[in-house]
Image 1: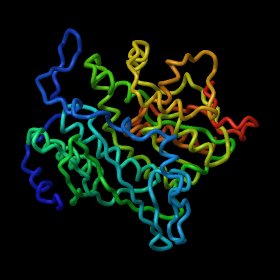
Image 2: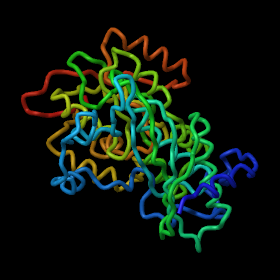
Image 3: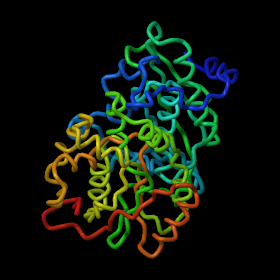
Length: 380
């Protein structure tokens, strides 16, 4: 059954500032007075994705190349979305994404999931056109208002992106899941895959890392009020600049940082282009409070799974201990855009992105020729 009726009912709900989780002003912990969606989820956000090594094995027998020339981007290089040409001037970008809750506020969870799904369209350089909802709720467990708030969060993010949320599919499911199937448009010449980085390019990252760690701290109720706000600000922020970056000829490759962490997506990008990346690790933006949680051992299990999958593909400088290294394999949900751009255009693009409100966009490294030892990423 479609869910158009449920979507239409959200128009009658009153506006809500997404901050109705309660914190103890002394210890900064989340109150138990709200329904804890996270207690119903064995993972959260993109941290519940299948790890890279297992996914590679699962997909081993799936054809990597399509028989139609109009499928411009498929699964060859693990790109963020599929792209299908419908004319010389226009192509469709298609993706779907859903996950379990990272927070207990239904409205914020809906915003996070919707923003994360639309990010895949932006990461290809496309502009979203429309979306359908993917819904799985334990309908006899969750309060009705919580389920309505999740839907409203998704609707509001779609409005912010300038598109309709126009239907979807729902099931009764033990774990709450929510996301979108989204369609976007792009000119075929503007497609930004993750496999076209060029030697000499500069690497940019538009958002800080650490949201997976902060989500773990949230679930353990050790996150501070200030840390929670920074976490929410980043995880709900749309990656809208991707559509503009798609129009820039000097942008050669792009992806968004999600469940495999910065390290995993760097490896995909480097392997796809047969190059290596030198990362100035100290310059990589990270939510400040995340370092404190890492020092206390608060790290999502997905970070460990990711790091185990990356053996032989990356190296760290001696100054980065094993705990600190996990920040760079931390699963991100609706993470920043990772952009490979010609060196002479990098600073102008940074300035433009800052003007769009992405104040933490940072140069994090450069593209070099493939190393003889076949290491994809070196975190210096």
